Length: 395
Ligand code: HMG
Image (tube, rainbow, N blue to C red; front, side):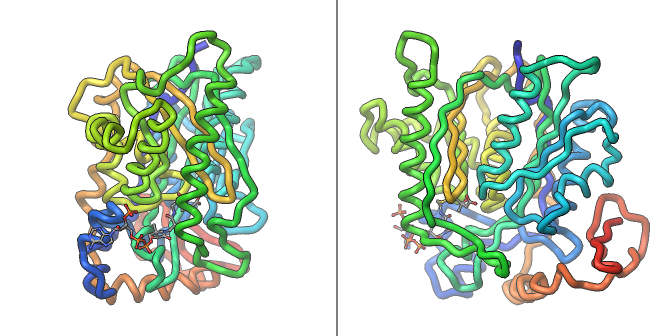
Protein backbone atom coordinates (compact mmCIF):
# COMPACT_ATOMS: atom_id res chain seq x y z
CA UNK A 1 0.00 0.00 0.00
CA UNK A 2 1.36 3.47 -0.95
CA UNK A 3 0.69 5.86 1.93
CA UNK A 4 1.99 9.29 2.78
CA UNK A 5 1.46 13.05 2.56
CA UNK A 6 -1.29 14.17 0.20
CA UNK A 7 -1.29 17.88 1.11
CA UNK A 8 0.97 20.18 3.13
CA UNK A 9 -0.06 23.69 4.17
CA UNK A 10 1.59 26.37 6.26
CA UNK A 11 0.15 29.09 8.49
CA UNK A 12 2.55 31.76 9.72
CA UNK A 13 1.89 34.67 12.07
CA UNK A 14 1.53 37.97 10.20
CA UNK A 15 4.43 39.64 12.09
CA UNK A 16 8.19 39.06 12.08
CA UNK A 17 11.39 40.32 13.65
CA UNK A 18 14.57 40.62 11.61
CA UNK A 19 17.47 38.89 13.39
CA UNK A 20 19.69 41.84 12.44
CA UNK A 21 17.37 44.10 14.45
CA UNK A 22 17.55 41.74 17.43
CA UNK A 23 21.35 41.51 17.17
CA UNK A 24 21.75 45.30 17.12
CA UNK A 25 19.48 45.64 20.16
CA UNK A 26 21.41 42.97 22.06
CA UNK A 27 24.85 44.32 21.12
CA UNK A 28 25.75 41.19 19.14
CA UNK A 29 27.35 41.22 15.65
CA UNK A 30 24.44 40.56 13.21
CA UNK A 31 26.61 37.92 11.49
CA UNK A 32 26.40 35.80 14.64
CA UNK A 33 22.62 35.42 14.34
CA UNK A 34 22.33 35.44 10.53
CA UNK A 35 25.35 33.21 9.72
CA UNK A 36 26.40 31.70 13.07
CA UNK A 37 22.85 30.65 14.05
CA UNK A 38 21.58 30.66 10.46
CA UNK A 39 18.28 32.56 10.81
CA UNK A 40 17.18 35.77 9.02
CA UNK A 41 13.81 36.39 10.66
CA UNK A 42 11.56 34.88 13.25
CA UNK A 43 7.77 34.89 12.95
CA UNK A 44 6.04 36.69 15.83
CA UNK A 45 2.44 36.07 16.81
CA UNK A 46 0.08 39.01 17.47
CA UNK A 47 -2.21 38.85 20.49
CA UNK A 48 -5.13 37.30 18.59
CA UNK A 49 -2.94 34.41 17.38
CA UNK A 50 -2.22 31.31 19.44
CA UNK A 51 -1.51 27.63 18.84
CA UNK A 52 -5.19 26.96 18.10
CA UNK A 53 -5.50 29.66 15.42
CA UNK A 54 -2.24 28.60 13.77
CA UNK A 55 -3.40 24.97 13.75
CA UNK A 56 -6.87 25.82 12.42
CA UNK A 57 -5.56 28.13 9.70
CA UNK A 58 -3.06 25.52 8.52
CA UNK A 59 -5.69 22.76 8.71
CA UNK A 60 -8.19 24.75 6.61
CA UNK A 61 -5.52 25.43 4.00
CA UNK A 62 -4.55 21.74 3.84
CA UNK A 63 -8.19 20.68 3.31
CA UNK A 64 -8.50 23.26 0.51
CA UNK A 65 -5.25 22.14 -1.11
CA UNK A 66 -6.34 18.50 -1.05
CA UNK A 67 -9.85 19.39 -2.25
CA UNK A 68 -11.50 17.31 0.47
CA UNK A 69 -14.23 18.21 2.94
CA UNK A 70 -13.87 18.25 6.72
CA UNK A 71 -16.37 15.38 6.98
CA UNK A 72 -13.93 13.04 5.21
CA UNK A 73 -11.35 13.29 8.03
CA UNK A 74 -11.42 10.21 10.27
CA UNK A 75 -8.31 10.97 12.33
CA UNK A 76 -7.32 14.42 13.62
CA UNK A 77 -4.16 14.94 15.63
CA UNK A 78 -2.49 18.16 16.70
CA UNK A 79 1.11 17.83 17.84
CA UNK A 80 2.18 20.74 20.01
CA UNK A 81 4.30 21.65 23.00
CA UNK A 82 2.60 25.02 23.44
CA UNK A 83 -0.95 23.86 24.08
CA UNK A 84 -3.56 26.20 25.56
CA UNK A 85 -5.12 23.91 28.17
CA UNK A 86 -3.90 21.10 30.43
CA UNK A 87 -6.89 18.94 29.54
CA UNK A 88 -8.84 20.05 26.47
CA UNK A 89 -6.70 19.31 23.40
CA UNK A 90 -5.93 21.88 20.72
CA UNK A 91 -7.31 19.25 18.34
CA UNK A 92 -10.82 19.68 19.80
CA UNK A 93 -10.78 23.44 19.21
CA UNK A 94 -9.59 22.73 15.66
CA UNK A 95 -12.34 20.16 15.17
CA UNK A 96 -14.91 22.81 16.07
CA UNK A 97 -13.35 25.60 14.00
CA UNK A 98 -13.00 23.42 10.89
CA UNK A 99 -16.31 21.61 11.27
CA UNK A 100 -14.79 18.14 11.40
CA UNK A 101 -17.45 15.52 12.08
CA UNK A 102 -18.04 13.45 15.21
CA UNK A 103 -16.95 10.16 13.58
CA UNK A 104 -13.31 11.00 14.04
CA UNK A 105 -10.43 10.06 16.37
CA UNK A 106 -9.36 13.42 17.84
CA UNK A 107 -6.39 14.00 20.14
CA UNK A 108 -3.26 15.99 20.91
CA UNK A 109 0.28 14.63 21.11
CA UNK A 110 3.18 16.01 23.12
CA UNK A 111 6.85 15.23 23.03
CA UNK A 112 8.59 18.58 22.54
CA UNK A 113 9.30 19.00 18.82
CA UNK A 114 8.69 15.27 18.17
CA UNK A 115 4.96 15.58 19.00
CA UNK A 116 3.72 15.99 15.43
CA UNK A 117 5.89 13.15 14.15
CA UNK A 118 4.35 10.89 16.81
CA UNK A 119 0.98 11.89 15.32
CA UNK A 120 2.15 11.36 11.74
CA UNK A 121 3.53 7.88 12.47
CA UNK A 122 0.36 6.90 14.35
CA UNK A 123 -1.84 8.15 11.51
CA UNK A 124 0.20 6.30 8.88
CA UNK A 125 -0.14 3.08 10.90
CA UNK A 126 -3.93 3.67 11.11
CA UNK A 127 -4.11 4.11 7.33
CA UNK A 128 -1.95 1.04 6.67
CA UNK A 129 -4.11 -1.06 9.03
CA UNK A 130 -7.10 -0.42 6.71
CA UNK A 131 -10.66 -1.54 7.37
CA UNK A 132 -13.85 0.45 7.79
CA UNK A 133 -16.26 1.61 5.13
CA UNK A 134 -14.77 4.98 4.16
CA UNK A 135 -11.26 5.84 2.94
CA UNK A 136 -8.89 6.41 5.85
CA UNK A 137 -7.88 10.08 5.64
CA UNK A 138 -5.98 11.79 8.48
CA UNK A 139 -5.31 15.44 9.24
CA UNK A 140 -2.16 15.85 11.35
CA UNK A 141 -1.23 19.38 12.37
CA UNK A 142 1.94 20.67 14.00
CA UNK A 143 1.46 24.04 15.68
CA UNK A 144 3.64 26.00 18.09
CA UNK A 145 4.86 29.40 19.13
CA UNK A 146 8.48 29.00 20.21
CA UNK A 147 9.48 31.22 23.08
CA UNK A 148 12.60 31.69 25.22
CA UNK A 149 13.31 34.49 27.67
CA UNK A 150 14.38 37.93 26.45
CA UNK A 151 18.16 38.33 26.39
CA UNK A 152 18.80 34.60 26.78
CA UNK A 153 20.93 32.60 24.31
CA UNK A 154 17.73 30.98 23.06
CA UNK A 155 16.10 34.31 22.13
CA UNK A 156 17.30 34.33 18.47
CA UNK A 157 15.87 30.82 18.01
CA UNK A 158 12.19 31.69 18.57
CA UNK A 159 9.51 31.61 15.86
CA UNK A 160 6.18 29.97 15.22
CA UNK A 161 3.96 28.31 12.62
CA UNK A 162 1.26 25.77 11.98
CA UNK A 163 1.94 23.05 9.43
CA UNK A 164 -0.91 20.76 8.40
CA UNK A 165 -0.61 17.45 6.59
CA UNK A 166 -3.31 15.39 4.94
CA UNK A 167 -2.22 11.73 5.08
CA UNK A 168 -3.83 9.00 3.01
CA UNK A 169 -3.40 6.18 0.54
CA UNK A 170 -2.09 7.12 -2.92
CA UNK A 171 -0.68 10.46 -1.72
CA UNK A 172 0.04 13.30 -4.13
CA UNK A 173 3.11 14.81 -2.39
CA UNK A 174 5.37 12.32 -0.62
CA UNK A 175 5.07 8.57 -0.21
CA UNK A 176 6.45 7.51 3.20
CA UNK A 177 8.22 4.14 3.59
CA UNK A 178 7.24 1.75 6.36
CA UNK A 179 10.64 1.38 8.06
CA UNK A 180 11.15 3.88 10.90
CA UNK A 181 14.36 4.24 12.91
CA UNK A 182 13.69 5.35 16.48
CA UNK A 183 15.86 6.79 19.24
CA UNK A 184 14.72 7.98 22.67
CA UNK A 185 16.59 8.97 25.80
CA UNK A 186 15.58 10.55 29.12
CA UNK A 187 17.65 13.76 29.05
CA UNK A 188 17.14 17.28 30.43
CA UNK A 189 18.27 19.29 27.42
CA UNK A 190 15.21 21.53 26.94
CA UNK A 191 12.07 21.72 29.03
CA UNK A 192 9.30 24.07 30.15
CA UNK A 193 8.20 23.67 33.77
CA UNK A 194 4.40 23.88 34.22
CA UNK A 195 4.13 27.49 35.47
CA UNK A 196 6.54 28.86 32.84
CA UNK A 197 5.69 30.45 29.48
CA UNK A 198 9.37 30.38 28.44
CA UNK A 199 11.32 27.27 27.52
CA UNK A 200 14.44 26.54 29.56
CA UNK A 201 17.36 25.01 27.76
CA UNK A 202 20.90 23.77 28.28
CA UNK A 203 21.87 24.99 24.80
CA UNK A 204 25.17 23.22 24.17
CA UNK A 205 23.84 19.99 25.73
CA UNK A 206 20.70 20.19 23.57
CA UNK A 207 22.87 20.28 20.45
CA UNK A 208 24.81 17.24 21.72
CA UNK A 209 21.55 15.37 22.47
CA UNK A 210 20.18 16.19 19.01
CA UNK A 211 23.37 14.88 17.35
CA UNK A 212 23.36 11.68 19.43
CA UNK A 213 19.78 11.16 18.29
CA UNK A 214 20.77 11.53 14.61
CA UNK A 215 23.22 8.66 14.99
CA UNK A 216 20.89 6.60 17.18
CA UNK A 217 17.84 6.90 14.93
CA UNK A 218 19.83 6.22 11.77
CA UNK A 219 21.50 3.13 13.22
CA UNK A 220 18.13 1.83 14.39
CA UNK A 221 16.75 2.49 10.90
CA UNK A 222 19.51 0.26 9.49
CA UNK A 223 18.67 -2.47 12.04
CA UNK A 224 14.92 -2.30 11.35
CA UNK A 225 15.19 -2.69 7.58
CA UNK A 226 14.13 -6.09 6.27
CA UNK A 227 16.12 -5.82 3.04
CA UNK A 228 19.48 -7.61 3.10
CA UNK A 229 21.62 -5.12 1.20
CA UNK A 230 22.98 -2.24 3.30
CA UNK A 231 21.16 1.05 2.92
CA UNK A 232 23.34 4.08 2.31
CA UNK A 233 22.17 7.56 3.11
CA UNK A 234 24.38 8.70 0.20
CA UNK A 235 21.79 7.23 -2.18
CA UNK A 236 19.20 9.73 -0.96
CA UNK A 237 18.60 12.77 -3.18
CA UNK A 238 17.59 15.16 -0.38
CA UNK A 239 17.76 15.22 3.43
CA UNK A 240 15.30 17.12 5.59
CA UNK A 241 16.11 17.72 9.25
CA UNK A 242 14.37 19.20 12.27
CA UNK A 243 15.54 22.83 12.06
CA UNK A 244 15.55 24.70 15.40
CA UNK A 245 17.89 27.10 13.54
CA UNK A 246 19.68 26.79 10.20
CA UNK A 247 23.14 25.97 11.56
CA UNK A 248 21.75 22.91 13.35
CA UNK A 249 20.95 21.35 9.96
CA UNK A 250 24.62 21.66 8.97
CA UNK A 251 25.69 19.93 12.17
CA UNK A 252 23.03 17.22 11.68
CA UNK A 253 24.11 16.62 8.08
CA UNK A 254 27.77 16.21 9.10
CA UNK A 255 26.73 13.82 11.88
CA UNK A 256 24.62 11.69 9.54
CA UNK A 257 27.17 11.52 6.75
CA UNK A 258 29.86 10.57 9.25
CA UNK A 259 27.95 7.27 9.49
CA UNK A 260 29.00 6.70 5.86
CA UNK A 261 32.62 7.63 6.56
CA UNK A 262 32.44 11.19 5.19
CA UNK A 263 34.31 13.94 7.02
CA UNK A 264 32.82 17.42 7.62
CA UNK A 265 34.30 18.89 4.41
CA UNK A 266 32.84 16.07 2.30
CA UNK A 267 29.46 16.44 4.01
CA UNK A 268 29.51 20.22 3.51
CA UNK A 269 30.19 19.73 -0.22
CA UNK A 270 26.77 18.07 -0.56
CA UNK A 271 24.89 20.45 1.74
CA UNK A 272 23.76 23.17 -0.69
CA UNK A 273 22.18 20.68 -3.08
CA UNK A 274 20.85 18.07 -0.66
CA UNK A 275 19.71 20.26 2.25
CA UNK A 276 19.82 23.94 1.19
CA UNK A 277 16.29 24.35 -0.27
CA UNK A 278 14.72 22.83 2.86
CA UNK A 279 16.08 25.80 4.86
CA UNK A 280 14.72 28.63 2.69
CA UNK A 281 11.41 28.98 4.57
CA UNK A 282 12.68 27.96 8.06
CA UNK A 283 15.34 30.70 7.85
CA UNK A 284 12.44 33.17 7.70
CA UNK A 285 10.13 31.46 10.21
CA UNK A 286 12.57 30.56 12.98
CA UNK A 287 11.93 27.52 15.15
CA UNK A 288 8.38 26.26 14.75
CA UNK A 289 9.03 23.36 17.16
CA UNK A 290 6.70 20.49 16.09
CA UNK A 291 6.23 22.04 12.66
CA UNK A 292 9.92 22.51 11.96
CA UNK A 293 10.61 19.27 10.05
CA UNK A 294 7.42 19.64 8.01
CA UNK A 295 8.03 23.33 7.27
CA UNK A 296 11.46 22.23 6.04
CA UNK A 297 9.86 19.53 3.88
CA UNK A 298 7.42 22.09 2.46
CA UNK A 299 10.33 24.45 1.84
CA UNK A 300 12.15 21.75 -0.11
CA UNK A 301 9.14 21.05 -2.32
CA UNK A 302 8.28 24.73 -2.83
CA UNK A 303 11.75 26.19 -3.40
CA UNK A 304 14.10 23.53 -4.79
CA UNK A 305 14.99 24.66 -8.33
CA UNK A 306 15.65 21.07 -9.46
CA UNK A 307 12.84 18.74 -10.56
CA UNK A 308 12.14 16.39 -7.65
CA UNK A 309 9.70 13.88 -9.19
CA UNK A 310 10.75 10.48 -7.82
CA UNK A 311 13.44 11.98 -5.55
CA UNK A 312 14.36 9.84 -2.55
CA UNK A 313 14.17 11.70 0.76
CA UNK A 314 15.55 11.10 4.24
CA UNK A 315 13.69 12.79 7.10
CA UNK A 316 14.91 13.31 10.67
CA UNK A 317 12.62 14.42 13.47
CA UNK A 318 13.94 15.39 16.93
CA UNK A 319 12.15 16.39 20.09
CA UNK A 320 14.04 17.33 23.23
CA UNK A 321 13.63 15.19 26.25
CA UNK A 322 14.19 13.21 23.95
CA UNK A 323 12.67 11.25 21.06
CA UNK A 324 13.72 11.04 17.42
CA UNK A 325 12.92 9.23 14.20
CA UNK A 326 14.69 8.74 10.89
CA UNK A 327 12.58 7.64 7.94
CA UNK A 328 12.51 7.82 4.16
CA UNK A 329 10.11 8.71 1.38
CA UNK A 330 9.71 9.45 -2.31
CA UNK A 331 8.46 12.67 -3.92
CA UNK A 332 5.37 12.00 -6.03
CA UNK A 333 5.33 13.42 -9.58
CA UNK A 334 3.75 16.90 -9.66
CA UNK A 335 4.24 17.55 -5.91
CA UNK A 336 6.28 20.72 -6.40
CA UNK A 337 3.52 22.45 -8.37
CA UNK A 338 0.93 21.58 -5.73
CA UNK A 339 2.79 23.52 -3.00
CA UNK A 340 4.41 26.22 -5.15
CA UNK A 341 2.95 29.16 -3.17
CA UNK A 342 3.72 27.76 0.28
CA UNK A 343 5.90 30.66 1.43
CA UNK A 344 3.78 33.49 0.02
CA UNK A 345 2.44 34.59 3.42
CA UNK A 346 6.00 35.30 4.55
CA UNK A 347 6.19 38.05 1.92
CA UNK A 348 3.21 39.77 3.54
CA UNK A 349 4.49 39.80 7.12
CA UNK A 350 4.85 43.16 8.84
CA UNK A 351 8.34 43.66 10.20
CA UNK A 352 8.42 44.76 13.84
CA UNK A 353 10.62 47.31 15.55
CA UNK A 354 12.43 45.97 18.62
CA UNK A 355 10.18 47.83 21.08
CA UNK A 356 7.04 46.43 19.39
CA UNK A 357 8.49 42.90 19.65
CA UNK A 358 9.33 43.34 23.34
CA UNK A 359 5.89 44.82 24.10
CA UNK A 360 4.20 41.84 22.41
CA UNK A 361 6.47 39.43 24.28
CA UNK A 362 5.40 40.89 27.64
CA UNK A 363 1.71 41.18 26.66
CA UNK A 364 1.57 37.46 25.81
CA UNK A 365 2.20 36.68 29.49
CA UNK A 366 -1.44 37.61 30.19
CA UNK A 367 -2.95 36.06 27.06
CA UNK A 368 -4.52 33.06 28.80
CA UNK A 369 -6.51 35.28 31.16
CA UNK A 370 -7.31 38.14 28.76
CA UNK A 371 -11.05 38.97 28.99
CA UNK A 372 -13.13 38.17 25.93
CA UNK A 373 -13.69 41.02 23.50
CA UNK A 374 -16.13 40.66 20.62
CA UNK A 375 -14.48 40.92 17.19
CA UNK A 376 -14.77 44.30 15.52
CA UNK A 377 -15.61 43.02 12.06
CA UNK A 378 -16.21 39.74 10.24
CA UNK A 379 -13.28 37.34 10.76
CA UNK A 380 -11.63 35.99 7.61
CA UNK A 381 -9.73 33.35 9.57
CA UNK A 382 -9.82 32.01 13.15
CA UNK A 383 -8.75 34.55 15.79
CA UNK A 384 -8.33 34.24 19.56
CA UNK A 385 -10.80 36.55 21.30
CA UNK A 386 -9.98 36.00 24.97
CA UNK A 387 -11.48 34.12 27.91
CA UNK A 388 -15.21 34.19 28.61
CA UNK A 389 -16.52 32.50 31.76
CA UNK A 390 -13.21 30.61 32.02
CA UNK A 391 -13.46 29.33 28.44
CA UNK A 392 -11.26 30.37 25.53
CA UNK A 393 -13.23 31.94 22.70
CA UNK A 394 -12.36 32.01 19.01
CA UNK A 395 -14.04 33.80 16.15
P1 HMG B 1 25.05 30.69 21.73
O1 HMG B 1 25.50 30.83 23.14
O2 HMG B 1 24.65 31.93 21.01
O3 HMG B 1 26.14 29.89 20.88
O4 HMG B 1 23.86 29.66 21.68
P2 HMG B 1 27.55 30.21 20.32
O5 HMG B 1 28.21 31.33 21.06
O6 HMG B 1 28.18 28.88 20.30
O7 HMG B 1 27.31 30.75 18.81
C1 HMG B 1 26.52 30.08 17.90
C2 HMG B 1 27.28 29.97 16.57
O8 HMG B 1 27.53 31.30 16.08
C3 HMG B 1 28.66 29.30 16.68
O9 HMG B 1 28.81 28.50 15.51
C4 HMG B 1 29.63 30.47 16.63
O10 HMG B 1 30.90 30.12 16.11
C5 HMG B 1 28.90 31.39 15.67
P3 HMG B 1 29.04 26.91 15.64
O11 HMG B 1 30.25 26.72 16.48
O12 HMG B 1 27.81 26.36 16.32
O13 HMG B 1 29.20 26.44 14.24
N1 HMG B 1 29.32 32.80 15.78
C6 HMG B 1 29.46 33.61 14.71
N2 HMG B 1 29.30 33.39 13.39
C7 HMG B 1 29.51 34.43 12.55
N3 HMG B 1 29.88 35.68 12.98
C8 HMG B 1 30.03 35.94 14.30
C9 HMG B 1 29.84 34.88 15.22
N4 HMG B 1 29.90 34.78 16.58
C10 HMG B 1 29.58 33.50 16.90
N5 HMG B 1 30.40 37.16 14.70
C11 HMG B 1 22.29 28.08 20.88
C12 HMG B 1 23.43 29.01 20.51
C13 HMG B 1 21.74 27.48 19.61
C14 HMG B 1 22.80 26.97 21.80
C15 HMG B 1 21.19 28.92 21.60
O14 HMG B 1 20.63 29.83 20.69
C16 HMG B 1 20.10 28.07 22.22
O15 HMG B 1 20.21 27.65 23.36
N6 HMG B 1 18.98 27.84 21.46
C17 HMG B 1 17.87 27.01 21.93
C18 HMG B 1 18.22 25.54 21.96
C19 HMG B 1 18.28 24.90 20.61
O16 HMG B 1 17.77 25.40 19.62
N7 HMG B 1 18.89 23.70 20.55
C20 HMG B 1 18.99 22.94 19.32
C21 HMG B 1 19.06 21.45 19.55
S1 HMG B 1 17.71 20.83 20.55
C22 HMG B 1 16.33 20.92 19.48
O17 HMG B 1 16.48 21.07 18.30
C23 HMG B 1 14.98 20.81 20.11
C24 HMG B 1 14.21 22.11 20.18
O18 HMG B 1 13.71 22.44 18.89
C25 HMG B 1 13.07 22.03 21.21
C26 HMG B 1 12.09 20.87 21.16
O19 HMG B 1 12.40 19.72 20.86
O20 HMG B 1 10.95 21.14 21.55
C27 HMG B 1 15.07 23.28 20.64
